[in-house]
Length: 205
Image (tube, rainbow, N blue to C red; front, side, top):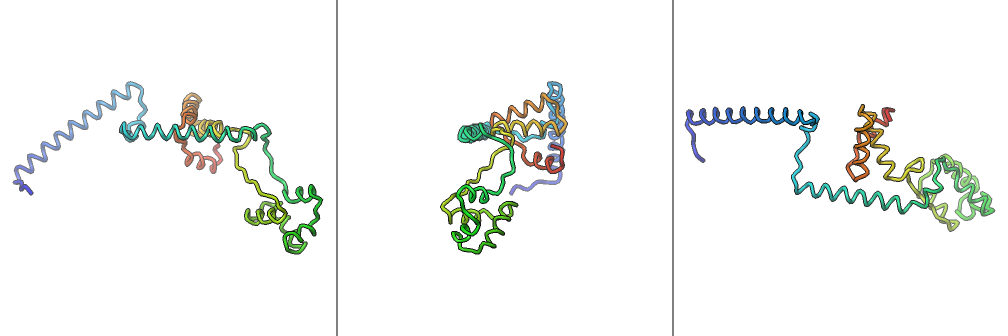
């Protein structure tokens, strides 16, 4: 390792400080020039994206758009009869349709009638585990279908856009800025679900 004398180190330090001061002055001038062009001050804190990684970002956006479209097209037939509701007790309705009494169901499941009544009551309150519901359905050669979907008949794409618009509006942005952010979600940009969930818990959405 090369050894430096005190005078050389002092000269090196002064030269480095001068270069740093010049660089800071250049940064200030560039920030002022960008601000005069309409740049938001918050944009300066964003990390610089290298062109190589930019390709990965565009690819992620394309994949997101494809996944959203596939979901919406696959479940489009369900959207035609979409309605908001709180499901009733499925087994009560199914037993009535099959002409099956709680005693018959108890024989099929292998428990007492009182136990079946308790299970039906818990199922009506949504207080039963899915694996138990699946076993109850299997004992009478039926199946359980669990389907999670956006409310109010919205497609996944419309839900992303609506959530993005509400988030920006709740953050105090104008309608134009919120609409632009919603359009970015349609093109596959990353949605800020963390802040969306936080504001939803706070009752601001």
